Picture 1: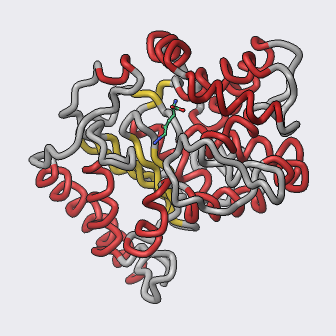
Picture 2 (picture 1 turned 135 degrees about the vertical axis):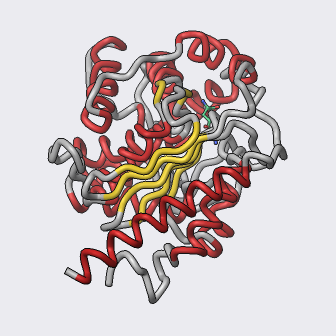
Amino acid sequence: MDEVRAQERLVEWFGDVCQDVHGRLAALTDGEPASYIPELANVDPDRFAIATVAVNGQPTLLGDHEHRFTIQSISKLLLYGLALETHGRDQVLRRAGVAPTGDPFNAIELDDALHRAPNPMVNSGAIAITDMVDGDSFEERADVVLALFERYLGHRPDVDDAVCASEYSTGHRNRAIGYLLLDQGIIGDRVEETLDLYFMQCSILITTADLAMIGATIANNGVHPVTGERVVGPKVARDMLTVALTCGMYDYAGEWAYTVGIPAKSGVGGGIVGMIPGVGGIAVFSPRLDEHGNSVRGIRVFEELSQEFDLHVFDADQPWNP
Ligand code: DON
Protein backbone atom coordinates (compact mmCIF):
# COMPACT_ATOMS: atom_id res chain seq x y z
CA MET A 1 0.00 0.00 0.00
CA ASP A 2 2.85 2.34 0.92
CA GLU A 3 4.45 1.60 -2.41
CA VAL A 4 1.24 2.54 -4.23
CA ARG A 5 1.07 5.82 -2.30
CA ALA A 6 4.76 6.51 -3.04
CA GLN A 7 4.12 5.94 -6.75
CA GLU A 8 1.09 8.28 -6.65
CA ARG A 9 3.20 10.95 -4.96
CA LEU A 10 5.86 10.56 -7.62
CA VAL A 11 3.28 10.98 -10.40
CA GLU A 12 1.89 14.09 -8.68
CA TRP A 13 5.37 15.51 -8.22
CA PHE A 14 6.15 14.78 -11.87
CA GLY A 15 2.99 16.62 -12.98
CA ASP A 16 3.86 19.62 -10.78
CA VAL A 17 7.41 19.80 -12.12
CA CYS A 18 6.21 19.54 -15.75
CA GLN A 19 3.79 22.40 -15.09
CA ASP A 20 6.52 24.51 -13.52
CA VAL A 21 8.95 23.78 -16.38
CA HIS A 22 6.27 24.59 -18.96
CA GLY A 23 5.44 27.87 -17.21
CA ARG A 24 9.06 28.99 -16.91
CA LEU A 25 10.33 27.93 -20.34
CA ALA A 26 7.46 29.67 -22.15
CA ALA A 27 9.56 32.82 -21.63
CA LEU A 28 12.45 31.31 -23.62
CA THR A 29 12.29 32.72 -27.14
CA ASP A 30 15.74 31.80 -28.49
CA GLY A 31 15.98 30.16 -31.92
CA GLU A 32 13.89 30.38 -35.08
CA PRO A 33 11.33 28.08 -36.70
CA ALA A 34 12.68 26.15 -39.70
CA SER A 35 12.41 28.16 -42.90
CA TYR A 36 14.42 26.12 -45.41
CA ILE A 37 11.09 24.53 -46.26
CA PRO A 38 9.07 27.74 -46.81
CA GLU A 39 5.78 26.37 -45.50
CA LEU A 40 7.36 25.42 -42.17
CA ALA A 41 8.00 29.11 -41.47
CA ASN A 42 4.23 29.68 -41.28
CA VAL A 43 3.92 28.35 -37.73
CA ASP A 44 3.10 30.23 -34.57
CA PRO A 45 6.54 30.24 -32.91
CA ASP A 46 5.08 30.61 -29.41
CA ARG A 47 3.23 27.29 -29.39
CA PHE A 48 4.48 25.10 -26.58
CA ALA A 49 3.36 21.73 -25.30
CA ILE A 50 4.65 19.02 -23.04
CA ALA A 51 3.00 15.58 -22.98
CA THR A 52 3.97 12.37 -21.26
CA VAL A 53 2.38 8.93 -21.33
CA ALA A 54 3.42 6.22 -18.88
CA VAL A 55 3.59 2.59 -19.98
CA ASN A 56 0.32 2.04 -18.10
CA GLY A 57 -1.30 4.68 -20.36
CA GLN A 58 -1.46 7.47 -17.77
CA PRO A 59 -1.02 10.87 -19.49
CA THR A 60 0.26 14.26 -18.31
CA LEU A 61 -0.72 16.99 -20.80
CA LEU A 62 0.32 20.64 -20.72
CA GLY A 63 -0.04 23.65 -23.01
CA ASP A 64 -0.85 23.24 -26.72
CA HIS A 65 -0.89 19.43 -26.59
CA GLU A 66 -3.79 19.20 -29.06
CA HIS A 67 -2.15 21.45 -31.66
CA ARG A 68 -1.11 19.53 -34.78
CA PHE A 69 2.30 19.93 -36.39
CA THR A 70 4.32 17.95 -38.93
CA ILE A 71 6.30 15.03 -37.57
CA GLN A 72 9.27 15.60 -39.92
CA SER A 73 12.35 13.55 -39.05
CA ILE A 74 10.71 11.78 -36.12
CA SER A 75 9.04 9.67 -38.83
CA LYS A 76 12.50 8.21 -39.59
CA LEU A 77 12.40 6.29 -36.31
CA LEU A 78 9.01 4.75 -37.06
CA LEU A 79 9.94 3.82 -40.63
CA TYR A 80 13.14 2.24 -39.30
CA GLY A 81 11.04 0.04 -37.00
CA LEU A 82 8.79 -0.89 -39.92
CA ALA A 83 11.76 -1.87 -42.10
CA LEU A 84 13.26 -4.01 -39.32
CA GLU A 85 9.91 -5.65 -38.69
CA THR A 86 9.21 -6.30 -42.39
CA HIS A 87 12.65 -7.14 -43.77
CA GLY A 88 14.77 -8.10 -40.74
CA ARG A 89 18.01 -6.69 -39.42
CA ASP A 90 20.37 -8.10 -42.08
CA GLN A 91 18.54 -6.52 -45.00
CA VAL A 92 18.21 -3.21 -43.17
CA LEU A 93 21.87 -3.15 -42.15
CA ARG A 94 22.83 -3.62 -45.77
CA ARG A 95 21.33 -0.20 -46.51
CA ALA A 96 22.01 1.79 -43.34
CA GLY A 97 24.49 1.20 -40.53
CA VAL A 98 24.29 2.44 -36.95
CA ALA A 99 27.23 4.87 -36.81
CA PRO A 100 26.52 8.41 -35.55
CA THR A 101 27.96 10.90 -38.03
CA GLY A 102 28.38 14.10 -36.03
CA ASP A 103 27.29 15.83 -39.24
CA PRO A 104 24.08 17.72 -40.12
CA PHE A 105 20.99 15.65 -40.94
CA ASN A 106 21.09 16.52 -44.65
CA ALA A 107 24.81 15.85 -45.20
CA ILE A 108 25.45 14.08 -48.49
CA GLU A 109 27.51 11.20 -47.20
CA LEU A 110 27.68 7.43 -47.36
CA ASP A 111 29.74 4.81 -45.58
CA ASP A 112 32.07 4.13 -48.52
CA ALA A 113 33.79 1.11 -47.02
CA LEU A 114 30.55 -0.71 -46.24
CA HIS A 115 28.63 0.76 -49.13
CA ARG A 116 25.61 1.96 -47.20
CA ALA A 117 24.20 5.04 -45.49
CA PRO A 118 25.83 5.78 -42.13
CA ASN A 119 22.64 5.46 -40.06
CA PRO A 120 18.85 5.60 -40.54
CA MET A 121 18.34 8.94 -38.73
CA VAL A 122 20.20 11.11 -41.27
CA ASN A 123 18.48 11.78 -44.58
CA SER A 124 20.62 9.39 -46.65
CA GLY A 125 19.77 6.49 -44.31
CA ALA A 126 16.13 7.52 -43.99
CA ILE A 127 15.64 7.64 -47.76
CA ALA A 128 17.35 4.22 -48.08
CA ILE A 129 14.91 2.90 -45.45
CA THR A 130 11.83 4.52 -47.00
CA ASP A 131 12.75 2.75 -50.24
CA MET A 132 12.09 -0.52 -48.35
CA VAL A 133 8.37 0.25 -47.91
CA ASP A 134 6.61 -2.47 -49.89
CA GLY A 135 3.96 -1.84 -52.55
CA ASP A 136 3.49 -1.60 -56.31
CA SER A 137 2.57 2.09 -56.44
CA PHE A 138 2.90 5.30 -54.44
CA GLU A 139 -0.69 4.83 -53.20
CA GLU A 140 -0.04 1.30 -51.92
CA ARG A 141 3.17 2.33 -50.20
CA ALA A 142 1.60 5.46 -48.69
CA ASP A 143 -1.12 3.23 -47.32
CA VAL A 144 1.50 1.02 -45.61
CA VAL A 145 3.05 4.11 -43.98
CA LEU A 146 -0.30 5.55 -42.86
CA ALA A 147 -1.37 2.14 -41.50
CA LEU A 148 1.85 2.05 -39.47
CA PHE A 149 1.02 5.43 -37.95
CA GLU A 150 -2.52 4.28 -37.27
CA ARG A 151 -1.18 1.47 -35.07
CA TYR A 152 0.80 3.97 -32.99
CA LEU A 153 -1.86 6.71 -32.86
CA GLY A 154 -5.07 4.72 -32.76
CA HIS A 155 -6.32 6.72 -35.76
CA ARG A 156 -5.22 7.33 -39.33
CA PRO A 157 -3.26 10.59 -39.48
CA ASP A 158 -3.77 13.47 -41.91
CA VAL A 159 -0.98 14.78 -44.10
CA ASP A 160 -0.27 18.52 -44.33
CA ASP A 161 -0.51 18.89 -48.11
CA ALA A 162 0.95 22.41 -48.11
CA VAL A 163 4.07 21.29 -46.20
CA CYS A 164 4.35 18.21 -48.43
CA ALA A 165 4.18 20.36 -51.59
CA SER A 166 6.75 22.73 -50.10
CA GLU A 167 9.11 19.82 -49.29
CA TYR A 168 8.65 18.54 -52.83
CA SER A 169 9.41 21.84 -54.52
CA THR A 170 12.49 22.64 -52.40
CA GLY A 171 13.83 19.12 -51.72
CA HIS A 172 16.69 19.24 -54.23
CA ARG A 173 19.26 18.09 -51.72
CA ASN A 174 17.15 15.06 -50.85
CA ARG A 175 16.80 14.40 -54.57
CA ALA A 176 20.60 14.50 -54.88
CA ILE A 177 20.86 12.01 -52.01
CA GLY A 178 18.24 9.76 -53.61
CA TYR A 179 20.07 9.62 -56.92
CA LEU A 180 23.39 9.04 -55.18
CA LEU A 181 21.82 6.06 -53.40
CA LEU A 182 20.57 4.80 -56.77
CA ASP A 183 23.98 5.30 -58.37
CA GLN A 184 25.54 3.25 -55.58
CA GLY A 185 22.98 0.47 -55.97
CA ILE A 186 21.69 1.00 -52.41
CA ILE A 187 18.11 1.70 -53.51
CA GLY A 188 16.00 0.72 -56.52
CA ASP A 189 15.14 2.95 -59.48
CA ARG A 190 11.77 4.26 -58.28
CA VAL A 191 13.66 7.21 -56.76
CA GLU A 192 11.04 9.90 -57.39
CA GLU A 193 8.30 7.72 -55.89
CA THR A 194 10.42 6.97 -52.82
CA LEU A 195 11.21 10.68 -52.40
CA ASP A 196 7.50 11.49 -52.67
CA LEU A 197 6.91 8.95 -49.92
CA TYR A 198 9.69 10.48 -47.80
CA PHE A 199 8.20 13.98 -48.24
CA MET A 200 4.79 12.59 -47.30
CA GLN A 201 6.00 10.79 -44.16
CA CYS A 202 7.68 14.03 -43.00
CA SER A 203 4.41 15.94 -43.54
CA ILE A 204 2.22 13.68 -41.37
CA LEU A 205 0.34 15.71 -38.75
CA ILE A 206 0.54 14.71 -35.11
CA THR A 207 -0.13 16.30 -31.73
CA THR A 208 2.26 16.34 -28.80
CA ALA A 209 -0.05 13.89 -27.04
CA ASP A 210 0.22 11.56 -30.08
CA LEU A 211 3.96 11.85 -29.94
CA ALA A 212 4.08 10.90 -26.25
CA MET A 213 1.95 7.83 -27.09
CA ILE A 214 4.43 6.85 -29.82
CA GLY A 215 7.24 7.21 -27.28
CA ALA A 216 5.38 5.19 -24.67
CA THR A 217 4.76 2.38 -27.17
CA ILE A 218 8.45 2.11 -28.07
CA ALA A 219 9.42 2.41 -24.39
CA ASN A 220 6.95 -0.38 -23.61
CA ASN A 221 8.89 -2.88 -25.76
CA GLY A 222 6.67 -2.10 -28.74
CA VAL A 223 3.28 -2.69 -27.08
CA HIS A 224 0.76 0.17 -27.27
CA PRO A 225 -0.07 1.17 -23.67
CA VAL A 226 -3.78 1.73 -24.35
CA THR A 227 -4.81 -0.68 -27.13
CA GLY A 228 -2.44 -3.43 -25.98
CA GLU A 229 -1.55 -4.04 -29.63
CA ARG A 230 2.00 -5.10 -30.39
CA VAL A 231 3.19 -2.49 -32.88
CA VAL A 232 6.77 -3.77 -33.17
CA GLY A 233 8.57 -6.74 -31.62
CA PRO A 234 10.73 -6.30 -28.49
CA LYS A 235 14.02 -6.71 -30.40
CA VAL A 236 12.91 -4.12 -32.96
CA ALA A 237 11.93 -1.73 -30.15
CA ARG A 238 15.37 -2.29 -28.64
CA ASP A 239 17.09 -1.45 -31.95
CA MET A 240 14.92 1.68 -32.32
CA LEU A 241 15.87 2.82 -28.81
CA THR A 242 19.57 2.20 -29.43
CA VAL A 243 19.67 4.15 -32.67
CA ALA A 244 17.60 6.94 -31.07
CA LEU A 245 20.13 7.24 -28.25
CA THR A 246 23.18 7.27 -30.53
CA CYS A 247 21.87 9.11 -33.63
CA GLY A 248 18.46 10.63 -32.83
CA MET A 249 19.54 14.22 -32.21
CA TYR A 250 21.81 14.64 -35.24
CA ASP A 251 25.10 16.36 -34.60
CA TYR A 252 23.94 17.05 -31.03
CA ALA A 253 23.53 13.31 -30.31
CA GLY A 254 26.75 12.94 -28.30
CA GLU A 255 26.06 15.90 -26.01
CA TRP A 256 22.46 14.76 -25.65
CA ALA A 257 23.45 11.21 -24.64
CA TYR A 258 25.88 12.67 -22.11
CA THR A 259 23.68 15.30 -20.52
CA VAL A 260 20.11 14.04 -21.03
CA GLY A 261 20.68 10.31 -21.61
CA ILE A 262 17.19 9.56 -22.93
CA PRO A 263 16.80 7.83 -26.33
CA ALA A 264 15.09 10.51 -28.41
CA LYS A 265 14.29 11.76 -31.89
CA SER A 266 13.73 15.32 -33.05
CA GLY A 267 12.13 16.89 -36.10
CA VAL A 268 12.40 20.34 -37.67
CA GLY A 269 8.66 20.80 -37.10
CA GLY A 270 9.65 21.45 -33.46
CA GLY A 271 8.82 18.07 -31.93
CA ILE A 272 11.07 15.89 -29.80
CA VAL A 273 10.04 12.47 -28.51
CA GLY A 274 11.96 10.74 -25.73
CA MET A 275 11.59 7.15 -24.57
CA ILE A 276 12.41 5.96 -21.07
CA PRO A 277 12.53 2.16 -21.36
CA GLY A 278 9.93 0.47 -19.19
CA VAL A 279 8.65 3.84 -17.90
CA GLY A 280 7.05 5.88 -20.68
CA GLY A 281 7.29 8.49 -23.41
CA ILE A 282 7.90 12.24 -23.14
CA ALA A 283 7.11 14.63 -25.99
CA VAL A 284 7.72 18.34 -26.37
CA PHE A 285 6.60 20.66 -29.14
CA SER A 286 8.02 24.16 -29.63
CA PRO A 287 8.94 25.32 -33.15
CA ARG A 288 11.93 27.56 -32.40
CA LEU A 289 15.02 25.57 -33.34
CA ASP A 290 18.74 25.77 -32.57
CA GLU A 291 21.54 25.50 -35.12
CA HIS A 292 21.27 21.69 -35.18
CA GLY A 293 17.55 21.74 -36.04
CA ASN A 294 16.44 20.72 -32.53
CA SER A 295 13.74 22.55 -30.56
CA VAL A 296 15.38 25.00 -28.12
CA ARG A 297 12.69 24.70 -25.44
CA GLY A 298 12.45 20.97 -26.14
CA ILE A 299 16.11 20.45 -25.27
CA ARG A 300 15.69 22.48 -22.07
CA VAL A 301 12.59 20.55 -20.98
CA PHE A 302 14.41 17.23 -21.39
CA GLU A 303 17.51 18.52 -19.62
CA GLU A 304 15.47 19.68 -16.64
CA LEU A 305 13.27 16.56 -16.39
CA SER A 306 16.23 14.22 -16.81
CA GLN A 307 18.08 15.96 -14.03
CA GLU A 308 15.15 16.32 -11.63
CA PHE A 309 13.97 12.70 -11.96
CA ASP A 310 17.27 10.89 -12.70
CA LEU A 311 15.95 9.80 -16.09
CA HIS A 312 19.33 9.25 -17.74
CA VAL A 313 19.37 5.59 -18.84
CA PHE A 314 22.58 5.07 -16.87
CA ASP A 315 21.36 6.80 -13.70
CA ALA A 316 21.75 4.38 -10.80
CA ASP A 317 18.75 5.70 -8.85
CA GLN A 318 15.81 5.79 -11.23
CA PRO A 319 12.89 6.54 -8.90
CA TRP A 320 10.43 4.99 -11.38
CA ASN A 321 12.07 1.53 -11.24
CA PRO A 322 12.61 0.82 -7.54
O1 DON B 1 14.48 16.08 -45.16
C1 DON B 1 14.00 17.13 -44.76
O2 DON B 1 14.48 18.18 -45.08
C2 DON B 1 12.82 17.19 -43.80
N1 DON B 1 11.60 16.91 -44.41
C3 DON B 1 13.02 16.40 -42.55
C4 DON B 1 14.04 17.07 -41.77
C5 DON B 1 14.04 16.95 -40.32
O3 DON B 1 13.10 16.99 -39.57
C6 DON B 1 15.40 16.98 -39.83
N2 DON B 1 15.43 17.50 -38.54
N3 DON B 1 15.61 17.80 -37.55
